[in-house]
Length: 293
Ligand SMILES: [Mg+2]
Image 1: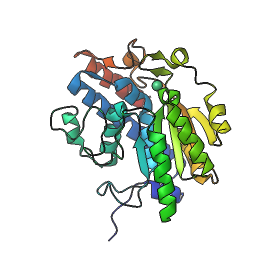
Image 2: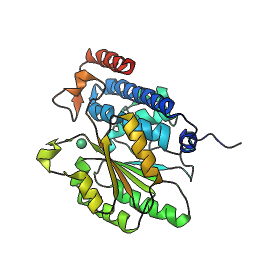
Image 3: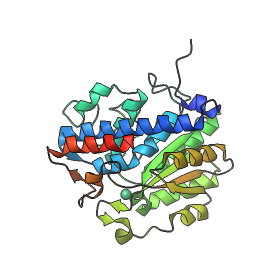
Image 4: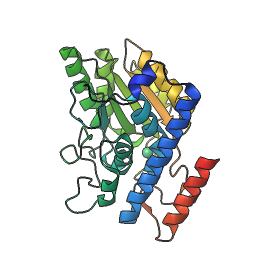
């Protein structure tokens, strides 16, 4: 008997009703956020704002788009999801737990000695983590090489790279963008998390990257831009990109740091967040209220 595959297969075949699909993804996004809050509480601080901001994107990718086998993370025909922003590990672990690739109860080991879930994502530690991220600007070059290799092998798997708007400051990102388009790698989908913030401050003040969509198009990419916290918009855009042929695709996602937890959405030091002990339960309550609305 074949091992079960992810829901992406059923959705690609058009068997899932759209409204039902969106409800299911929204619920997955809620659980990804809750997982991230639970992990954040273990350390009392971290890249929690980014995890909450990108949860809708990860929910769509992992429960609707990506083809994988949770119990066989090295399945050769799996779609590859590359996280070049290693500090978003908390978000990826939250999604991998939702996907069934890592056990939910393991999340409480996040960042502890001997845990498989280090603070920055590393391929050799964690099932489902494809590359070691952290040195920014490496994800898209690796994705380009992987996609070339897969095409050479006649493997139809797709390669996704989630990168941050801060990574648009990296020359290597644009070198890869140029190479990817040159080779017509339509098996590559880049997803840019535009939260308008990076370690040194607001992106617009550190190094202006707008107009982001025009830049990708000028580099030969099929580019769409959506509200990255709107599940329906993400589903429609990723469905469209899935069907696109002839050039690589990029989905530019405008997201809000801390999304879903109002008390964290407005926090000033948002890049690396400190959350007080008494605030965690309040955060979970606000998250639950948001799902009910
Ligand atoms: Mg950013």
